[in-house]
Image 1 (cartoon, helix red, strand yellow):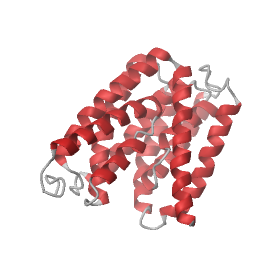
Image 2: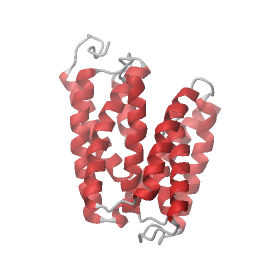
Image 3: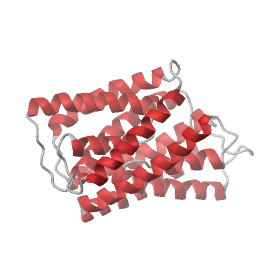
Image 4: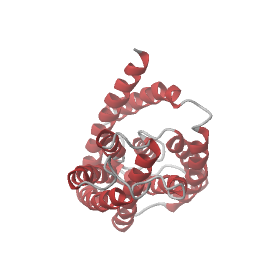
Length: 267
């Protein structure tokens, strides 16, 4: 199955071009503030409707993790990261993202959507209300507190990413800005490393299970990397103000998407 693609059983040039463009846009957006899955996942489900959800999600994960690797590397070169909260956060994310994926079969994810929608609205309101939030990088906690808060952040958001997923990058950026005292640039850089960890944990399931389309995954991965490199370069060059504006656009896109999905469930 992992070699087949499309209804005819082989890769189609036009379809790969569309998916490549979607992956490029997703990589650019994801590198700046996260949320690239808003572009690439709907593209896969819309243009490859006859395939299994697992194969499409596995293909997307291979694409997104490729861009995330290069984005994390570019951020690490251009932004000084604080490893005191990051290392515990990465450990928490690695363990709890797997637990979140395991919990999918036990709890209906539809119950989480209205709650996540409410949280996104609160995040957007809080960000708009305080124009100074995230403008300056001023970590405000002791090393010990940062480590515990980092682990808790990685555990909670790692579980959420494995269980449900939409908005993980946005929530990570907001937490680092609001509770750690980071500016938007450092918050985005830190969240990228945590997102990389959760994506790798997901791939530990998808790849051994053969849940991916090889040709599409390789094309999308290459395009995602190009988008990620451009996105991180823009973020590092233009700074926190640019990332904040991008962040708000992403939040409103998430709110509209999840609001529409919640409305469809209620009707």
